[in-house]
Length: 269
Image 1 (cartoon, one colour):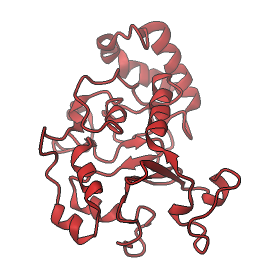
Image 2 (cartoon, helix red, strand yellow; image 1 turned 180 degrees about the vertical axis):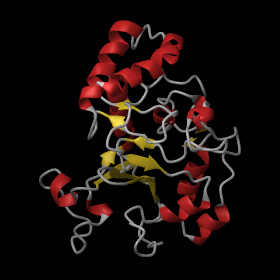
Image 3 (cartoon, helix red, strand yellow; image 1 turned 90 degrees about the vertical axis):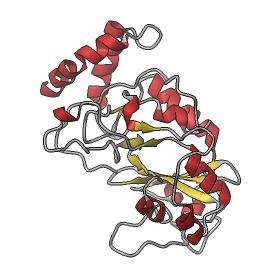
Image 4 (tube, one colour; image 1 turned 30 degrees about the vertical axis):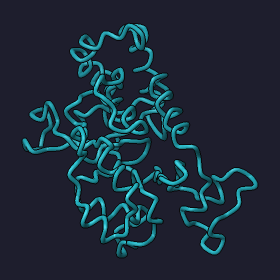
């Protein structure tokens, strides 16, 4: 997962879902939970994203996966207030912020991410195992220190969640039959979960403020309430509900005006 500094200001809360038309019924709602639309790259209507299909074919990636890569939104756009980011130039991008709790989303607009996603468990020490994932599976995110990897099976429409600090033998429900018993930590040994249900549950956690994803004006991203920041989350949650009308009467413009001061105040406590 992300290497967090010793202390960082808490993230900004999610906005209400964006009115932008979803380019994927599965992933678009998650992307729209971030504050600023500038960081979300939506696929052009009709053709979808212009990704490196030649590279995908050379990696034996299934056509269903390629189609998904072209249709989903990516967190890869510019920061709206880049001048506030000390040490970053005008080309600074939101690429690398957490798309899911404890994990960074891949951007398949980038060829390197297409290659590296075929072995999401790779730690950079050894070479990428280009044939590790099944051709119809796609890793949506990769973990850093304390997070998870999400792998989508496009045939079964299921996801497998690989926790970095545990493994299938610890996380699987009792009685799970291992698909690769000779490789105990293989990702296919993680029990499959219905993908739409999984993402609906995640989105509901954010809407209820059980999880608060960081906003795009911070370089380090995290979902507060996942593995860290529970006290900060509780303070932000109280303020959002009692003072800014979250969720039904959310005064978004007022929050945008006041957010920086509120975060700084909470960080200094």
